[in-house]
Image: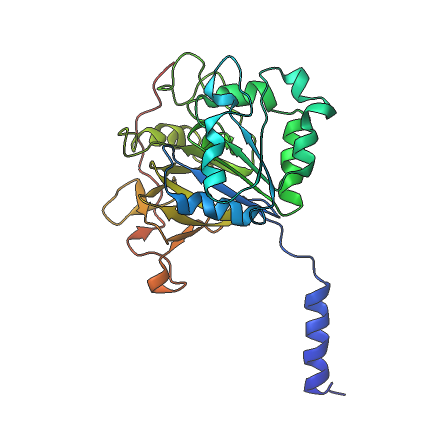
Length: 297
C-alpha cells in the first residue's frame, strides 16, 4: 500500500533532522576567525572583531609575543585599536616560555575571553611559546564557545596549519625550520603583506611543494572573516587564492578577491555578491602545469 504523500514528506524531514550536521573541513566548527595581512588600520575591521567577540563588554586578550620585545605590559599600544573600537575589557598576555604557557595560572584570562588577537612580528615566536600548550587548548575553547580569534601579519600566518616564513634566520624563507601553525584553518598556508612587499609569487613555491594545501595571501590593511568553511574579504585591498587544482583561463596560478567577495575553502570556489552564488568567472578546474622544484634550502 502506498504511503500518503504528507507522511512521506514528514518521514523525510525527520530522517534529515536525525542526520548529523556536516563537519567543518577547513575552518572552525564554532566561532570566527579574523585573519589580517598586516599594517591593519581600517577601524571597521577592528569594530567587526569586537562585534564578533560579543560587543564592547566582551573580554578581549591581546597577545604581542611575535613582536620580540624584552617584555610587554598593560600599556602595550597594540590594545588601543580595540579600545577605540569600543572594547572596555582588554588584557595583554605574553610569555616566551612554553612551560609558563602550559600553566593554568597563565591561561586564566583566556578562560574568560571572547576574543583573542595576535599582533605582528615573527610567527615562529608564537609557535615556540604556545604550540601544543594549555594556551593552544584555551584558544580552541574560545572558538568552541562561539568567540573569535584573530591576528595580523605574523598573527595571521600562525592561524594556518602550515606555517610559512617560519624560519628563525630570515622571513624570506617560505619553508623554514618552523612549519607547523596553530591549525585553526586546516590544510591552509597564509602569507601576509602580499602586494605591499611584492610577495604575490612567493606562495607558489609552497603550493608546488605541497599541492594539497590551500594558499591564502593577504595584502596590508585587509582581512578575511572566517565562519565555518567560508570567508568574506574585508578591508581595503585584496586576498589572493593559490590552489594547485585551479588556474585562470589565461593560465595564471593565482587570483584576487576584492572586499566583499566570498570564498568556500572546502569547495574551493569563490563568489562575488553581485553574481549571487554563481562561482567567480575565469577560474578553471585545470591543475597547475609542471614547474621548477622549490629551491634547495
